[in-house]
Length: 127
Image 1: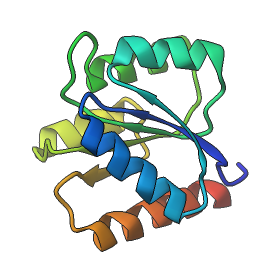
Image 2 (image 1 turned 90 degrees about the vertical axis):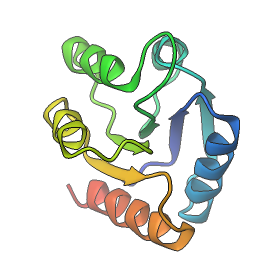
Image 3 (image 1 turned 180 degrees about the vertical axis):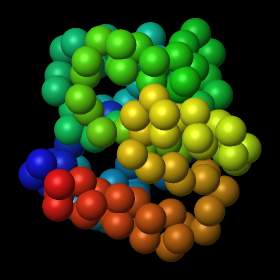
Image 4 (image 1 turned 180 degrees about the horizontal axis):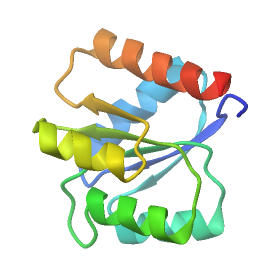
């Protein structure tokens, strides 16, 4: 897979979407769409073809796990990196089982989150 040039951020908190957009910009991804829940994310997926998704777990309407199930069942192949405050090992494992390729904690220091995101995106480009 080529290195992603665009991304969809799915999170119900505007300040987290802003933080995620900043992280993406720092690794060279400047075309970014935002959705506040899984329902809106599905609309974006049907309209655009994001090459990467940053996904929160806890959201209204359709949460991150429900969206991962939807993606998995529908055969969408967009790489998903979870960006969540949910740190329970079962949640991390469940997200991975549903196809998430990475997991970054929201409360990570900026430089750590940036390093992890860069490594995950570089890993996608190597596949």
